[in-house]
Length: 242
Length: 218
Image 1 (cartoon, helix red, strand yellow):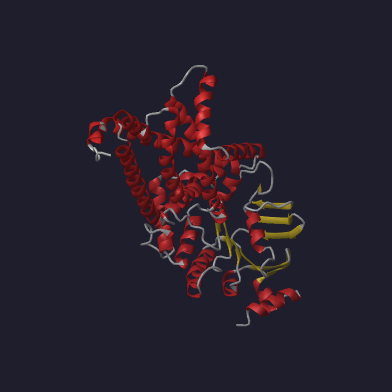
Image 2 (tube, each protein chain N blue to C red; image 1 turned 120 degrees about the vertical axis):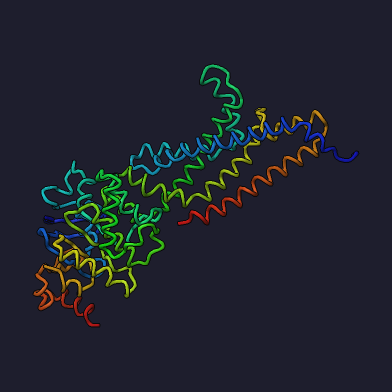
């Protein structure tokens, strides 16, 4: 589904991604973790072309993301993305946030889009919030609306960039529950997160990054059992000690 | 001084109201034209195509360095030479105001666009919107909300500035009052009425700005 081969990226002299390779098969859930500044967010943003990269190749299906002439908007409309800060459009109601992209990008009718929106909001446990503005919702609710907005495009895969990092602790689970359900429904997912409980529950593989390199890419049992690299062991001992 | 004669105002109200209408018309056309052109200029300034950004930037910096009255004189004298036939003073000040205001609106709009966080652009792009649609549906609506107070304040300043057209003889509110004042020898009454009218309109408008701001704040 998503195939990253030898990707490197530089900001001027500084190399943020070093020869990263990673394969996500259809229906797989990959958790990407690592210390801050390790390049995990940058890598995931390369997958839908939000960040350009200078070397290597990323393929989504049979479309090459970095190639000249690739219809990026079309490609992106097939990959959902959820951001750390939700990024709902603050000047639109929840309903419009989810409906507008369906109408303008997919060319769906207003009625069909609206029906889809309501259905998704129900699935997210937010049936009565459609006509509120994002600022009237809690962080956890906003993030679930953001997930609904991404799902409304019927994506073939979903990218999550630290979806719970900006949330108060009591709201983290309501978002993770939705993501677990999504994973169990067979959605292809790449999730940048420090939520190791989530990784244990639904991840197929855990990818550990450090200083721009993929240090470890292992099935979750192996990763949580005995990470091969020292850096991953150190990282795990730091975030799992409490 | 033999007391004040306020009848002169009532007797000439037609002329004065016409002048006020001209001031309003000038303001509205210059705001509409200035904002439209200003938006285009702002897009050009933010464009990644360097020549376009430099051209728009030069235009803005050039016009903002000139006194308004000079720009009005220039267009009054220059436009007939360019179009090849004389044009009325009113049209020339309309053009001058629009082009002059556009430079200021460009900067306001540019700041407004810059006030929208990069994450919002990324969210729009990630959904599959193209650059143009991200601008239209995501960035500009938020930018205009953020800059609403400054835009309206600029409109109020603009309304006050219209009185400058006096210099080329366009019959705005101040010029009309001046004509009446001279022909009746009643400058104090007339200039007082002009001052109070400007005060009431501008004060009311700025109160309105405050209310709009609270209503549309994001």
